Length: 280
Image 1 (tube, rainbow, N blue to C red):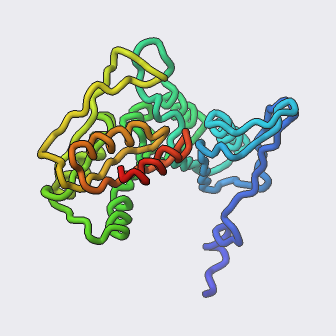
Image 2 (image 1 turned 90 degrees about the vertical axis):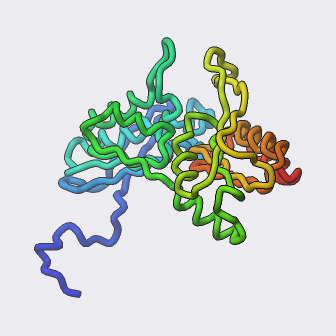
């Protein structure tokens, strides 16, 4: 179709990917470069802070990119734009520092700091998926913050892979590994009309940076013979999910399905393979 050339000036292009570079010096320091004009454009910057597969040289050593490195690179690209874009939207599937979302005692509030840093640099909107705690948006109340919920994708793929799944309170329960993720479980359980259960932690002590689990509390009916959906925003080491699965099996649960937005598997997959082989 022929369009009026003036109306579509600057909109029609072969690619909407902007060429950029992030070269590093031998000291490991870096700079962000944008290789074409972005003046007056709506920019969308996509960053995966959990991608540790990228490497760079640091004084002759190979260094893997950490979330801090990715976040710093994001700021470098925003700095290279130098305020010339019309509007900047950052798409960050896994929200940087989202697990450090609240303060207990003398500690840093990294997620709130990161969000404020971005908006202070001129970012208009931040889009993420299943934020560990959506209330973190209170740190930037005058700017756009979207946390996209993947509940529909979970259920769609569950039904696609388990067509015989019976969705009613006599055959299915939804479970959150901890009370922090109760909102997800409540949302899903209420939509499906099924029961739920959670784990109680000891907040007075910290072991390996986490509050240890004291007990697993049931809300609702017996789990015997029922299918279980364990839902969380991420599988990090996966210990808490496997622990819940084990307890459910001990109480006579039938099939167990794990739904997580982010499969980080920071300690590898061997524990999950073993659990799968053992029928857990």
